[in-house]
Length: 282
Image (cartoon, rainbow, N blue to C red):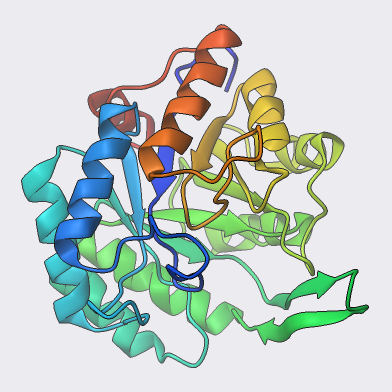
């Protein structure tokens, strides 16, 4: 990838952790998801990343919720749909069930286990802390299902070692090139969110892969700038960060996407159309 390549701009519109007490713009119902997807696509997003919720806002891993949200979005906009498969304590079979029912173009796949935490310096204590388990047997099971269903995996790599886990799976034959790799930065327990660390991760991404950055928290904008300078793609959205670079809370996913698009254009990069995104992801 190079700076002459178009930027695939992805929007993660809800996540599964935060709620409206923290950010009023987070969508809960299918219609709200569709409205947020419209705002994101109108500002330049070519792919929408989805965690399902029930209409009361609680996270869901049920087929009916993923289907209702996806159908609402695709009825509203033409966009690449990317479903999350990340979960704690949810059997692989349940995750495969909604992939099989919805058949998105892309599905995110976490590439390794890690401590996953948030620390408060003011409290001198962890706000939360748990082990995010993604063993190889689950990764392989999800890959086999994606291969069967014709779904492109997005490899979410929270540390350099997660990128190192790609090559054995290619050799094993369960992972098919070209790859789509996302460097997830800013989660405590994963790689610290610096431009130098992003460059190190990118240096280890397999040749020929498409890659992008997912910045968590307010360091997101520094990472977006670094990825744009290195020739990569970017993801923004209310799952990852609520705030614009000036510290104001975003009123919609569209505001976050608009800022990322402006940063891309200001750096001399062009944002990919939906058709171009499909071609880039093969």
